[in-house]
Length: 205
Image (tube, rainbow, N blue to C red; front, side, top):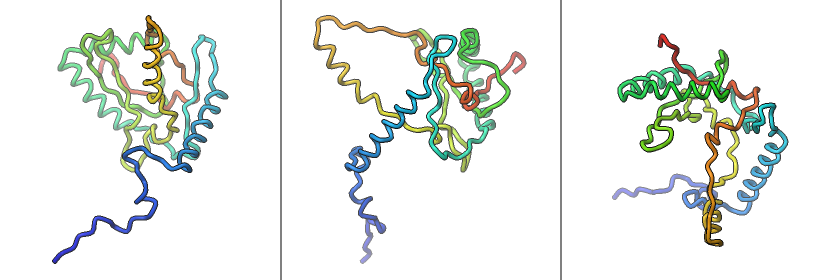
């Protein structure tokens, strides 16, 4: 008879951990709250309104994070794949127009130094922006950290959505608004911009 055990020397901590349900003990919960409060304090100390009238923020770096690699080869390989996909679907000029518009609005700028983010097109029919770039800060080489792994994880604001929706039941009329390119209106501190660099092609590919 062969006996197979499901447990391979588990620690008591692991046996009682309920990660799947996102249930944390009082000590872990306190640590998480402390991190959130420290993150808010850091944000309030570093956020400014710059000369363009935009809020300008720092990236929330992890203390003692490992050094980032340039990620050039991964970004270049994914760019070639994206270009092939765009040409195949006849969306190359529309994707290019997005970057041209961003440059005209000073959302992006040409640069020659930094670490690269890969990006890919996302097509959404019926949207005001039918095709748009999505950047991947989780991409990284073997045994190298990604940008996301070097940044603090902030408070999960999605948990506040149910309370916002419930408040719509308080009155007869609900008012909503949409800020054009809201995410792109936030400026990044010049010291951190080099970590948000990406590749694009010129007129000669």
